[in-house]
Length: 393
Image (cartoon, rainbow, N blue to C red):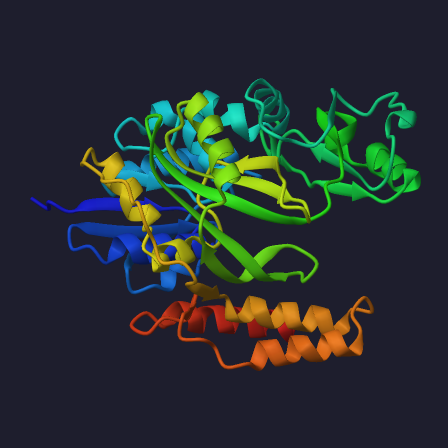
C-alpha cells in the first residue's frame, strides 16, 4: 500500500502553483499532481509534478469543472486539493460536499465571503476601528446621483472580484474615475455596476503593501511582508521584482484584529494602501495564495508546506523570524515592464535610461529567479516558448 499523500494543485498556469508544486513535491512522502484548463502548464512542466491533467474552464463551465474534480480526485485517490485562484477556491468550497473524500485547506465558504466581499469587509473594518477609505455603499448604478462623488479621482469598486451568476462567473475590475465623464461611462456600461453591489471610495494616494498570513482555526501561525520594487505595468500591478521586509506594526495589528475576529483558517493576504505619510488604509483581503509566494518560501516561510502540515493534522510551530532583504525576480515579467516603460510617453528619457540600467544591473546575490531554477529548468523553458509564441503572434 502506497503511504504517500497524493496532492492535487489546481491552476497550474499560475506562478503560485509552481511555487507550491516545488515546495510540496520535494518531500518524499508527497506525490504532486497538477492540473489546469490548458493542456500544458507552468507547474505541470516541473520535475516535481508527476502528472498533469486538464479540466473544463471553471469560469465558463463551473458545473463541468466540479464534476471533473469530484471524479478525478476519486480516481487518483487525492488526499488534499490546493486551488490557487479565487474562482477555483470558491468553486471547491461550493462543491465541498462532493469532495468529502479529500481535504480542502481553507475556511468555510461563508467565512471566506465575510472578508472576500469588499462591502462586508468595510463594515467589519468599521466595527474593528481599522482605518479604511471613506466609503459609500450602492446596490447597483440605477438612478445613481453623481453629485455624491465629492471629488476626483474616485475609486469605484465592485463588492466582489468575481460574481457568481449560478451558471458562470462575471469577472470585475476596480476602476479609478478621473472625472465625472469617466464615472458616468463606467456606471452606465459595466454589467457589474449596473446589476450588482459596488462601493464608492475616496482615492488614497500612495502605494500598496500587504501582510501575508497563515492561520490554524483562528490561531495565527506566521506572518510575512514584502515590498514591490518593480511592477508590471510600471504604474502599478503584479510584482516583477520584490524584496522581503519586516512586517509593519500597524498593518500587522490590523491584520491580526481582522483575521482573528473571523477565526480565519488557511492563508490570506491583507492588502493596504499606504499614504506618503506612512498611514495604512485597508483595501481588500485575498483569501488564497498570492503571486509572489516563492519569495516567502525563499525567505524561510514555506507557506504551502506549513499549510500542508496543518491540513494533515500535524503540529506546526509558528515561524517567528525570516530572512529580510531576500529578493525575487520574475525575469520575463521584468522584461515586459521595461518594454512598457520604454514605450510610454509618461516617462522622461532620463527615467527610461534609469530603467534600462536597473534592468541590466548585475543581480545581487540576495536575488533569486522566480521561474528559472537550477534542478527544475523545464518551467522556465516552457514559459520562454509561450512568451516567444505570443510575441511573434
